[in-house]
Length: 152
Image 1 (cartoon, one colour):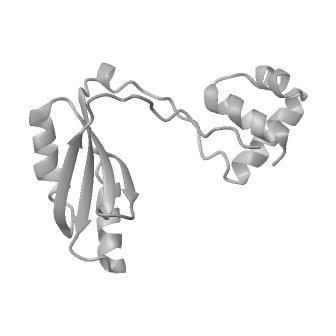
Image 2 (cartoon, helix red, strand yellow; image 1 turned 90 degrees about the vertical axis):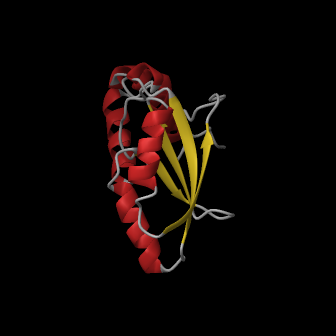
């Protein structure tokens, strides 16, 4: 990956709706060369997809929680069962296998505390092999993820 690819990725990260003409001007290539590079970055898996970043509060999700999950064991069978179940639950926005005190870290959004209690009881606690749950309420998002930083 060269400097042009890196600049192209930064430009796409900041606004993936930019036209090829606009992107080509930003990185100093012709539109056809820019389009080819984007295709190669997609084929290589560097660009995984294009998404709209939605505002959860404007959609009615007034609270967010990070939930630490500890499992009964860390066998491959238990981990696989948990991950399969977590992937199938749309209420779980993100799920990460972790090192440290907990096995997994989940991100969950809810309309209010009553809704979170419902998610906690019916979704999180119902996941297979859960031994311990620790929830932390997000009081304020100081910095949300907007993309990877530029690298030299």
